[in-house]
Amino acid sequence: DEARAALARAQALDPLSLITSTIAGYPDYYERRYEEAERQFTRVLQLDPQFSMAHFRRGLALTQLGRYDAAEAALEISRRLSGDRDVVAALGRLWALRGDADRARAAMDELRERSRETFVPAYALAVIEAALGR
Image 1 (cartoon, rainbow, N blue to C red):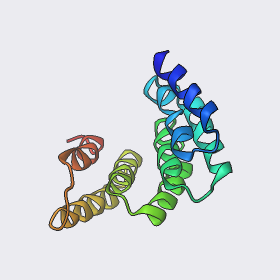
Image 2 (cartoon, rainbow, N blue to C red):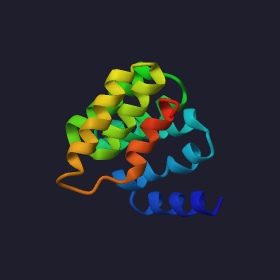
Image 3 (cartoon, rainbow, N blue to C red):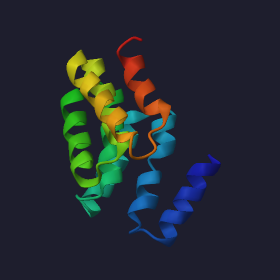
Image 4 (spheres, rainbow, N blue to C red):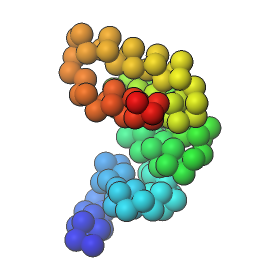
């Protein structure tokens, strides 16, 4: 409740802040209110369809809802816009949940390759491994 109040205040102070508006969906997401979170992330994308963070978070919510095609589309947009390692991990997890182990392993390979040049946290691989049932 405290986080929601603080986010509401932040949004009132800067209603066009894309980051604040995206973060405003986090409480719903972490309370497993994925439909509400997805709606919030979609509202952000109405302000700026190129805002990668909102596509990423929307993709996570859609994955939790089992709407894998829409989730993949959102995550692929985020990947194209940002190339972020967390997006690659989310895609790998999605593919594993969907039963596409080859693509999930390809995402893990990409993350391992990236780790040669930059930091990739172990959780990025772990979320894929867990979704593969390992």
